[in-house]
Image 1 (cartoon, rainbow, N blue to C red):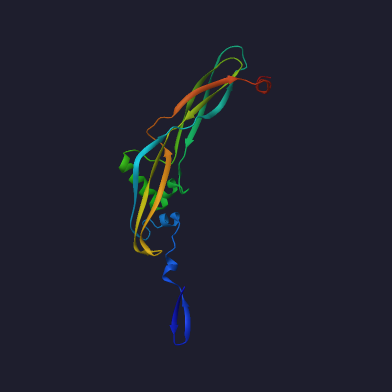
Image 2 (cartoon, rainbow, N blue to C red):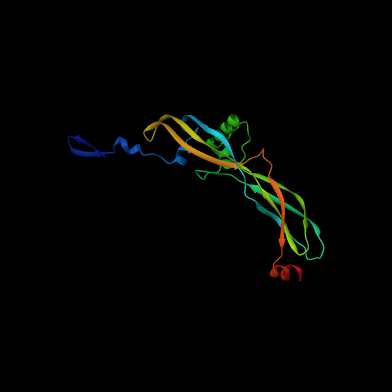
Length: 197
């Protein structure tokens, strides 16, 4: 707070520093192409492929017979995205510029597809030994990239024209097939009672 001396006395006026507090990273990204002269995303380093954890999909197949059984199970599995700011790039691509800016920069830099969601599905035949339960697992790879948004404002924003926002995102690796596998184990006594009687 600054003090201005006038003929009437002392008058308090806001200091220029009042507008120099740092806005949040999300507030800055909201300004991308909405008051900026330039808004770009600069990827850093290579894309990291992250092996997915195995997840059970579809219904389980219970074999209550004394012989091995083959059962079909239809399933779907969806892999989503996440990022360091907790925003949805899928939503923002359509409504806010920073989502589209990220996608364009990623695909131009790495010649890979960026997608916020990927759904796979099929019908799988499971061989289940007698007295066991079988299921299908899927492990979908994801791709991770980090970098920095550069925002140059036409007019000062919170006291500056240049702002930088670090950003990291992870999403489904469209070009990498998911790993599918079959698993089985002996039923517990409780499962045998519940499923086979």
